[in-house]
Length: 243
Image (cartoon, rainbow, N blue to C red; front, side):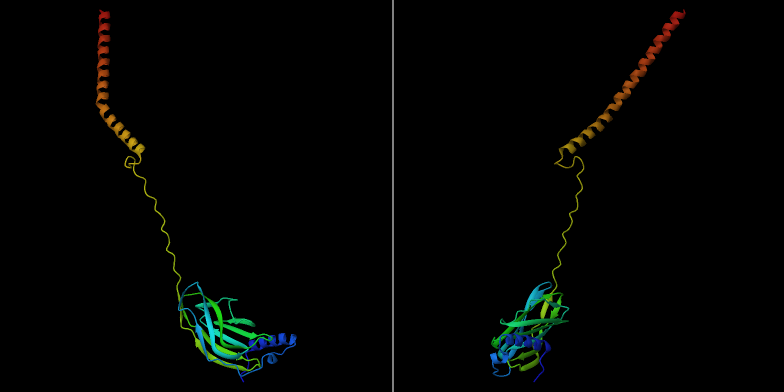
């Protein structure tokens, strides 16, 4: 007979203590029919997930008989996936304990007190998070079954899931920053009549200044001629007085 895994031994001890406290013996509550057995094992998981997602891995023991407790170790690539603490779901009516290691999750489960042994299909589910792009299989690397009389049947490398591919998370496309447009030159924007008027006025003033120049020169010439005439008159009067 194979030696029981230590974690499962502790669980069976807890179950025995509870039964003893009730005045019952585990073995007396459910007499052993035969060594615990199973016909096959399957491990199911999604084929593809995205980095950051969570997903379930379900292990099913098919065609079991007289299973009072079991200890199962699921192995995986810790660089790709991580177990979500507290997510294990085991058959109801028992006591469960989970232990994690680098790339492994160990689930030990046992019935309690007068609970009957399990038969048929037994399933438990573990939840994982996809931590990085890559792929990994989930393997039931070891499995031990225990009947109500503490008989242990152990096996290794029972089953593996198909490879689970973790796709990289989508990288958000950055939103381009709008570039401020240059303000239109005064008088060029149809929506800016003020600017247009200001430009027109400036042009008119510049044009007016250019037209005034000949008139200013003519006025200056007249002033000079007038001054010369005054000087001539003054000189004549002085000459007449002198005579």
